[in-house]
Amino acid sequence: MRSLASALRLLGGLVVMATMVAVFMVVCVFLLPWRGARIRACNVFGHITGRACLWLASADVQDAAACKARAEKFYPAIYVSNHTSAMDIFVGIWLGPSGVVGVAKKEVVWYPFFGQLYAISGHLLIDRSNRATAVEALAGLAALIAKHNLSVWMWPEGTRSKDGRLRAFKKGFAHLALATKLPIVPVVVSGAHKGWKKGSIVLEPTKLGIQVLDPIPTTDWTLDTLDAHVEEVHRQFVAALPADQRPVEGVEG
Image (cartoon, rainbow, N blue to C red):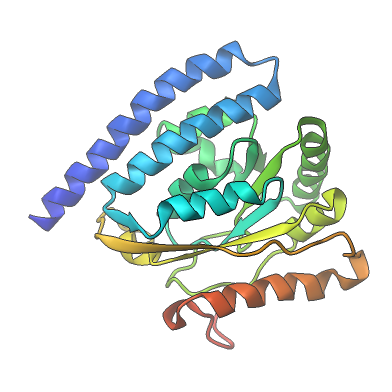
């Protein structure tokens, strides 16, 4: 029965995603000349679809309204979050305020329905296997942020944790902070790895904890102190996460 219920929830999520993608693909085609407008239109898609898919996945989001209000309060910013589950994508597209541009690996375009909309949405795709092009793409993102008064949402671990424990952070978000001087807002997610484990299609009911921490100013950041600032952000995640999601010294999750 549990497997059947999980399959039905997944099917329901695919139906919701396919329906919403069909609607917003038309919107994005109409808005092709205006990238900023496409990004904001897809934020509306995310707010509706992300919340619906979390509900269908039986993710009980704790203090959802308060989390949403805090995320919007700190706009504009660079929102950074930990990544342990496909469920984190739904958290990001639901929680990110209007005007938030996402940063995703180029392979996301192959995700059913969602990937095809992402491809024309105006959000950023990067090639993680090519550092030079990834850096160039982030530099272009800084200009886009300034032009359209945008924020950005990133998962600085670069890939999902296998066991829910926090991984080391890559520096892309910090270089973007240097270029934009936007504050960093840590968004700490706990419990997602229990609801939808990596490599599994079985959904388990779970309590999803989301903490939107206070902004970290970046106006005094420099290239010379960048490593220390990345570590500072990482420490805030470690302090906010439950014990079973904190990194184990010498072990990469």
